[in-house]
Length: 201
Image (tube, rainbow, N blue to C red):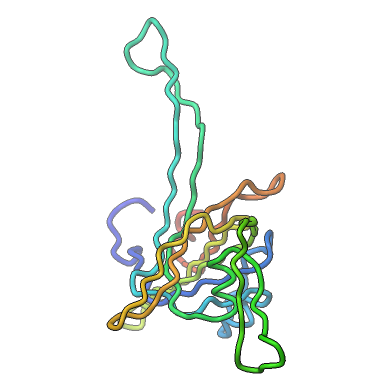
């Protein structure tokens, strides 16, 4: 409902990121076991304290006519939907995701030495990316949980990895949505939030 209502302010206090095979649907079951809800997805672990930056940019082209100074119409020419974040954990899943595919292999018969090869030619790896955050309210108020999923997308930018003595190394990623299959959504929100009951009435 329109109007001032402080209970509808959302703070992403606790969040998680997941990856899965392309076109994996965002889970709509909210139980006490988050791991079970996200079955089939891989948890990417800790992210930096900056959290996730959600960006939606639409490009519109004006239609100009001789008879008017202002545009008489706008045509959508581009939609750019991205999530930007930094992974804090170095492991097989995160390194492959950051680098864009490939595999981590054991070196010879060793059980504790591994190798990841960066190819001279990059290959596109289409994945699904899921985001979940919970706003835990004070004073016993109901906690709300939001989930956001890009069904098809890929890593389109990777930040520099800074190796330093006083700061942890991070895997900075920009993940961009790609055109979905026919009839599918570019991305989806699923919310456990009673604020939408009023909006839907």
